[in-house]
Length: 228
Image (cartoon, rainbow, N blue to C red; front, side, top):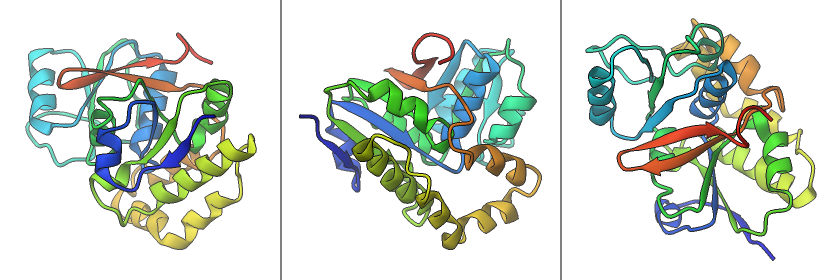
């Protein structure tokens, strides 16, 4: 019988060899799904800012997504709305973030790596319902700031959804009590409302990004091939 658990420490992620599910609710998980939904065929995840910038500079014509303060290049914010509505589907994308991309790259021993949020939780449940592999749910905040409690709340919702076989739609309201939504609205006023409309809508994106680590970056594909 498969074991399903939530990671509370980085070392749990580094040593895990089953199926890893990375959740960075605000906003990496959803931005990545929106890039896949947009139709991008080439997406690379970097955990190191310098490597990401260097790759982007050496491969002109692509788009760069990050919430980091990177003044030396033109970039998009780490925004699901911008990824879905403003990105060029024909341009490759590089994405590097404070927590989500680090969490993905920490899963080096994992057999499979999926990136998920409320937006594609039903797709994830359907994909893994018959899997016998052990599952580790990775709240990305453990790689940056554990006070970003929305990742832990989402991880709990995912765990309960796996146990029950259906999406836990109630726990999403617990995020409103953390103050993190107001914080996002304050720091990202240009896109936060539109981002949250995508992020907090359970099952509104029928794509499931899958990452495969290749050296200093992870290549992203839709699982299965194309849209689900």
